[in-house]
Length: 400
Image (cartoon, rainbow, N blue to C red; front, side, top):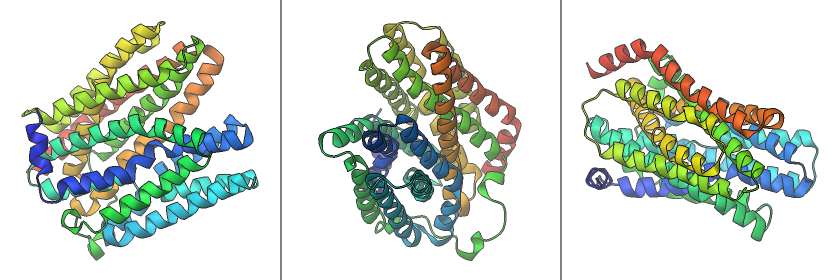
């Protein structure tokens, strides 16, 4: 099963590219929690901490596609160092303002700026894979599967690391680690010019934005709802275990979900199939909806563990086919922007559903809040189904 992955990683510069990008994007799983830990430990307010974290995530999701246009137009080597430097500066200023007990308005402003400027390293590395493998869609699908597994590893390793740093060293150390990791990762990634997509230059001006290409609205809508599943699931699982006096089990359940998704991603990337990508996306979304239905029906931790194991199997296939479709439907000169739009969809969904789940938990309990997960999963399938004809036409045009 590992042979297809070894094949793509043997491409010139591929392993070094992916490894250094892993360092640079580890902060995506740490920065939100790092903000919560810093602010809550400094002020004692979880409400303020959660609001600041959500503002950063939302600004990254909404504004992120616009810096991505600059990356497509001028190239990663020219834009990424400046973007990373600005993000690190804003993040450092945010930490200083929190420690100095600055007015809340300034905290929200700097949280928003650092979120808006945080580079989407996952999109950048996938754009590099597309540049290396654009003539070979099957191997590109394998590469995207590999990156989805890397994403799962990041979200398993990052949160415990952030917690350990903030509790054992200093409350600001998790965010300091985020700044250091993305800086080091950028310094290592930028000189790797062999895998960098060519800059679109002046040809990037005008024309349609990535979101306006046929099929893209359906994919982004599906990813918003998929992000809603992720956001609601994490918050609700923490509350579900806390209600039963087993809060320590939350990490285990979240790890089971991520492990299951990662294992499915490995299998999908190694599988040789002749099914078109838009059909793979539809099938994966249907399985996701079916396997998420039981969440609202479980009342024990053991049964929830089984449901997490089964439901996680459908996550990576949807992500992999979605990213791979974007790489086929959006022209190379807009590819980074297109991939950032899918990440933006995930970010918007996570922020909105996490807040909604919190409100339902306070009023009705965690078991009821799991219905948000089910609704988001079903919504993901319906969004893909509603856009299926456009996806099919766009796929056929891309393959013509």
